[in-house]
Image 1 (cartoon, rainbow, N blue to C red):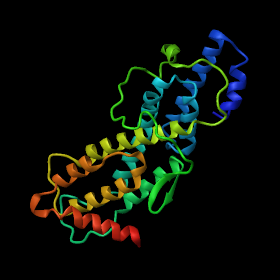
Image 2: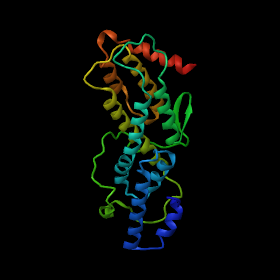
Image 3: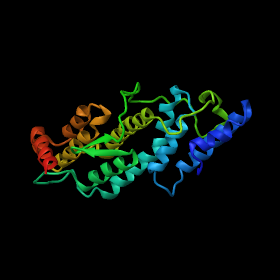
Image 4: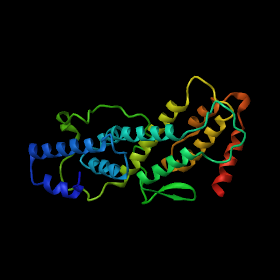
Length: 253
């Protein structure tokens, strides 16, 4: 959509009751179609459109809507990983000293999509964002079919004057939901029936890097990293402290 949220509001607010609801539903339908276009990656502009649409939603539906929209971004991330991973983690690797290229590309993509800055080798929001009530959300119950505009009447808030820009709290919520979804996708991609060989330590180092960059989500990554580490054949495991030190040395250079 080429209209800004503010321009769209000016049009919508000229109408009342069912006519206004019809316009909001139409805007939602067309925006979702735009976001989900197969030939276009989920980039920063699509995220901003998503956050703008959140301003039409009742608070209790925001997390579910963002979770639904970010399915597209997770597919993008999965494709990036599968395209660039070139290590057989069931095999042998002698040295471990830095995260692999695919992880560095993934972090760069997240930075650009979610409008983040890198300070002291960690991602930071470009603007200060207060703690959000959905901070610890892990699994989101799906109650709404957002692609069926005929069933959406109850999800919208009262149509008054909206902010001219998206709410920063919704940006933080989107990153928290994205991170939770991506960690689950990591498990689907890398954890199977076979144990990792010595090269599995490289995968652990990659995720130590990811967890350090994503500290701003306040997620405890210990359980996830432990799952990856425990999937390495016991005789091939390098002490976790060594891997953490390897990352710290890389980070300091």
